Image 1 (tube, rainbow, N blue to C red):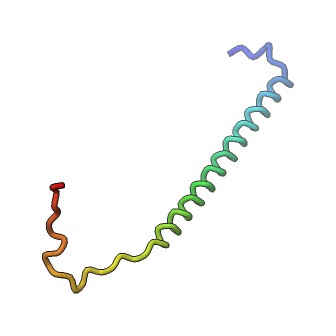
Image 2 (image 1 turned 45 degrees about the horizontal axis):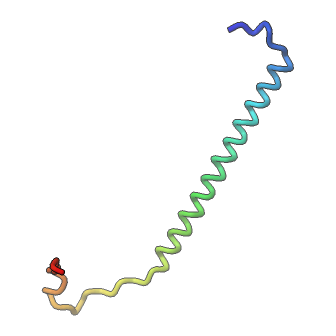
Image 3 (image 1 turned 180 degrees about the vertical axis):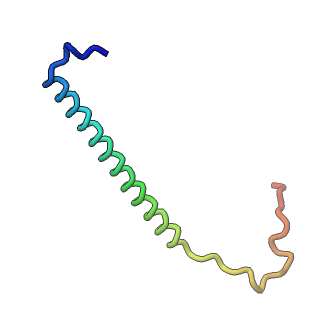
Length: 71
């Protein structure tokens, strides 16, 4: 690779631009992770807010063993 035609200022400028791109990418990933964590917390709160299903104790043993598939 021939770099004889590249100026020092141009190389520094390119390096700084690349560093900024990496920093913006890191910030985007951090924001995505935070949003994902927030959504996971909201989903767990929603799941935990569902009412508990009633128990099947005291029901006849044959209840729920067959499904009528005809309409």
